[in-house]
Image (tube, rainbow, N blue to C red; front, side):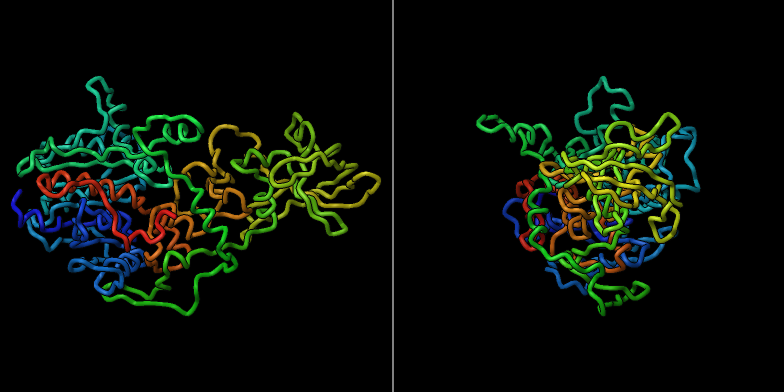
Length: 524
């Protein structure tokens, strides 16, 4: 294990449920100190969604034009159920992956649901067959509250996983309750250099019947902290910092402010086919080509304008889109109460004009109104806004106008929960979790910090840590799903660093470096 020859061999990795390759990208970017080639070699990747498998192939497969240091991995695009790996016992050093999270919950702890999470069982099946030295499970935060996690803990050290041991959760204390110990498996990507505060369950297990000793495996140490971010803003103070401040979104949005944003579509007349992956795919597109916008409805555009920096749906309360008969358009906010005891909107009286999300001293008043039929705010017609025909007065001028309410009854009635809906990403902080529908502000805090638009696919991919030369295949929706489902690359790289330090204890220092070609603009 400690010989010169073995230390120079790359550590072999199999990626299950690989997606577009966020984990693989992080493992490939990792460099031991002084090394100019990756410490890890991907031997295989299993992914059932063809567009995601195509993206993986364009970056890591035989036809990839990105720098390749080892033979490319075998890319298996199929359902993992009944798939039989071609490698023998012990031929793969590390198995990584994130079994799809649908169905994980804290309910029904008395038994493992055989149907809902069959794919979870398939991950374990492959581990049992291949007997890797290390396996890494990445999943949503609720995984640590699930029946499946309890099942894993019960099987580790007995049954089909008798020769495996869970690595101690980082920071675990003897006095921890079961829930406290489970929560310690949650790693925040921002603590490892990502520009995104994304908590993921990272569960690592090692074999106990091969070298090195299982107790030598450690979770990655955080390199950044929220506390240091706060301290770094206190000018004039010489504060000792154990960690770097959290990386923020500021540099990225400063960069994209200088980019042209006009197209709503990916570059046309570009498609590809890949041997072994069924279908024909749009692309490939470099990350830099994903800076595309949307065509939101007028009511959506007004909502964006009404939300101030750092704000969210709560800032829409009492605010209306006002269109005068003379063609002017403005946002106004009711002065005082905007709903009566019966929950009916109150329009009569003074309103303040809103600019850049903030109320101004300029006022108008509604003299009379009548309810119009609710206006459809989406192509499906399922979402409607409350609309009114009014008489509007400003100074000595009186005229007709139409109002559309920018909030909703549900948003008005609920202070708790969904606080990020229609929210702006905050400058000076990491972003929130980038999910698969980041292009829809009604799904979370995905409005640009200052501009009146959602973040773009390019911005989302960069917040996930993907390099600018990463290649993507599929439709806009398919690529968004690949971006949102990926493991943040900086977190993946730190996991790789810990695995390397465990499997190559006598090798080069395991302080992570990153490949120059991999991070072209990865952190502007």
